[in-house]
Length: 617
Image (tube, rainbow, N blue to C red; front, side, top):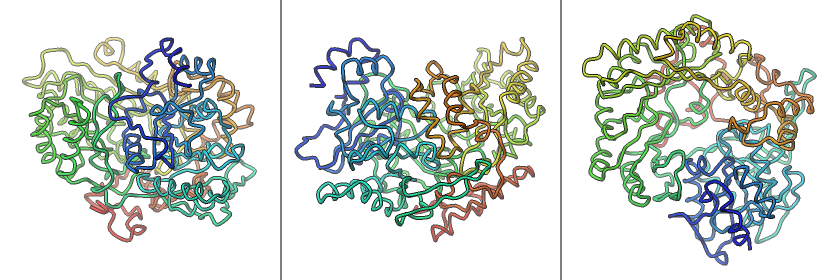
């Protein structure tokens, strides 16, 4: 038995609790009562995957159906993978400790482009061919979901189908269809043709892609009745969307070791670089009572002493102060910390600080994204220097003495004056701290985190080139020079590695030909590419050469408004011409108001047939 083999190797690996299952609230069912088995695969480590809210929701949703059984699967670290291969242990589900190759569905949540080689590694470790065309039997069906599916072309050859948009409803529809095929018979091709009729399901094998001589996409042609545009699924009544009343509680500490309650979906802001802000439209909130009830049930079922309110921008909840008042009435009584990880600078108030006094004063994080007001207008950040200083002052008066500031380098229209403005902003915040009455007596700590701008599909900046390594190096060196060695005693500067950010840009805006690159990279040793200690850029470079493709073609060239994008057949419900208009406004330095103040005219309401703001609320 597989369990016996595991017993022999677990003491040889780090944190064996990642690989044994049996945690509190995990779901174990009687196989005799189960008609559909689903392996929910998170293509990264247990510690990261167990922190992901989407996995918690869909795991519980599938298991709420008595005859469906969903199990969790994670990417093993190299020490565990080595032992598994040595001892002939295939990838298995944590609940049953049985091989996932025998399940009906193998589903991957695709949150990050640099996890793509992990998908291949996990399929191979499961004992399955990595290419969809080589898996001739109907089962197991390999599906993918998550934000990366808005352009799944680089990994299209490895998957049978994808779910575009929100998965709470469509996942069960797919499982019911597969259950019919399992009962009545039928082949893989027929199943995929029927699956493509379900709104939100994309079957890549039902689309032919052709290319122009310059390497750009010439045409995307559906066949076998597949839709010309795959329409994303959305949940209309978000207040009544399925939400679990308990989470699996790990034996060991994970990245976000707390209970999590989703308060809203979507974003009103329209920051032009932010993919999530566009692909998760429309904006929808849960009612206060629903949120409070979920906070209570999760706290009591998990035993966690911290609860986090999750969203793209929690402080944009329409009655955030009333919500916090209702929640803290409960959390303060129970001694539970309340965490608000997504606070906007312009929504940081005395009232909010007072409601989260129980949160540890380890530091505060703000994301101005750009140092100058001009560049903040270009990216439609819609915050001013006054907003930043007001928020920092409130924080300093509330006991905070360290501030982390996130900025991007290489934004469209960026100049060295914009880089200098980063340093000037940090200096002003330091001065503000020492001039704030009642501040903490310790020295202020300012951390500046610099990431390289990555143009993403379905944003107004999808047409923009990513800055080259040389251009980013110039900006980094310039900023360090003007801060100086003395300044760095108060201002700590860190930045992302260009090798990983250009690869993310390539995979984000790439086409189906990149499947060969991903395969070559994985075959020659690449996996866990999101981890600096495992990333092997030289192998990726060789893979591009072998495939005859150029990273600069995908990452560093501007794209015309009329170029056919590899993701042209994905319909995210808003008008793509809106992205063009926003791109033009960016280059004019003009901002667009947030959706709550004024409809931005993205076309979503026309598609929905009703006003989209707070759709279904």
